[in-house]
Length: 80
Figure 1 (cartoon, rainbow, N blue to C red):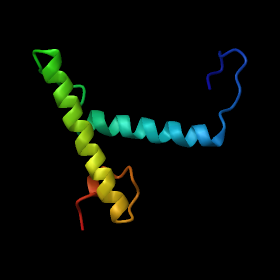
Figure 2 (figure 1 turned 45 degrees about the vertical axis):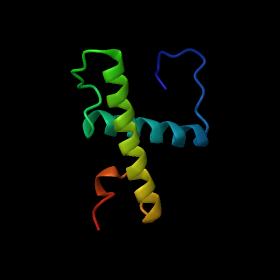
Figure 3 (figure 1 turned 180 degrees about the vertical axis):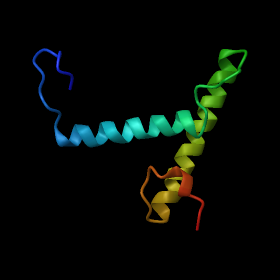
Figure 4 (figure 1 turned 90 degrees about the vertical axis):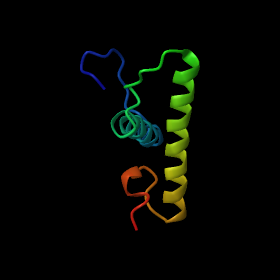
């Protein structure tokens, strides 16, 4: 919450946890999978690259769930 925000109210703990997970995942997509760096020439190419990167993240999360590891630690998904 910002100090200059009118009628500020604290977030519920459930929403804070959900927001943290989303922001962590987006930061990982930007850093590890270079989501912002795309040199595509068409909308179809951009769509396919983003789809491929999201599919890779989903696979890594599934591996983490299977190995009883935290879901958002994508770098360590394949480390045994």
